[in-house]
Image: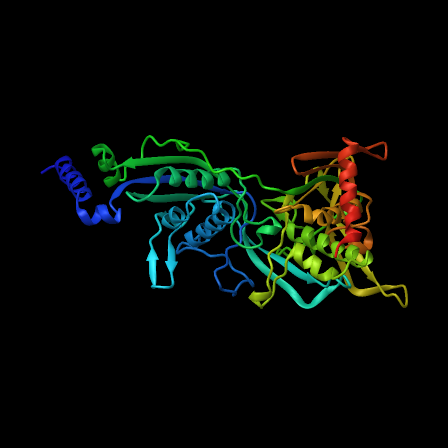
Length: 474
């Protein structure tokens, strides 16, 4: 008997099972499959910890060959959380349970998930894993906390992970709903609007789905059964017949462009003794503004502004906006402020030698010669881009938008430096342009002969009203 005859017998068997009473009553007969293949391209550093801490406080999860990979649980968790948070009220709950699966504690029963995601491995030959340093800053005095230094491994952006999803279609499942769920998830990933791993609110884990191919198998068709059994994935399509679920997301965002006034450094310490003692941090050999440094500077300045304006329960308000992490999971709160890690353009690094001076004698301290390699701006052009957002922006959050506007003002007017060696004048930025978006509105601010130029006075007045609401926060 050849393979075609065997497939025909199996196909006949599948058809026969559809007529059996038990399967028809339960609606569990398998009608087909949907396969989604593609590549997930990493756009920013990724942290998915392995639980080990021999080389760093957080080590990257790796496969048997030593390459990083993304476990299916990480991706499925992000996808399910996003979907149920945004669309659980507009689709049939039972169909959602069929797609994602559900545990029913009352009778210790399970609804098996129709959605299967495989672990995401990479075939990239050039993989860069590096260790980054971090330090906790006391918001009250601006100094480093005692024993607050930590380090963690990151996977540098640019590598691709293979994505493979499989969805089982049974009689009781709504095929149209399943297609729309898949279309929603694919659309979100293709736009790069979902992040994976740790520190996602600091710009980590951003990825984009590319080379998407979708295969649908209808088991009423003999050729589809043959293709499925042989795992013959050919003639894939880029889109499903049904489009994604649409839900308008309210976000307040600021995208601002600055020139480096003098010099700029977020310190990284090379392991090569021939290198300077400190250089500016880089990713894939390009200097960057790390999201952790930006988020820390913004949070500390927000707390200072809130205390200066005598906002009631200032610390609680800052935690409400920026979140809180600690050992007690019950008290942990996720940040609503998102920042992005951006590349620094139009800047050159130069070596600078320095010495420590004895403040009592005015002379040099023995063995205190050190050097650093900060960045310097070229032609007063845009070098540093700051991108930040408030998620789920509501009318009651206008005070928070006003707070970010004051922080933008401090950046723009050279009052808020970022990075290290601020005591010698580094990290000061000079504002050139900003774009602020909220409630389908957009305001552009530019510098014109030293003055601010607003594209719309009406929108500027509305943003000014947000700032005024800071004094009315309860």
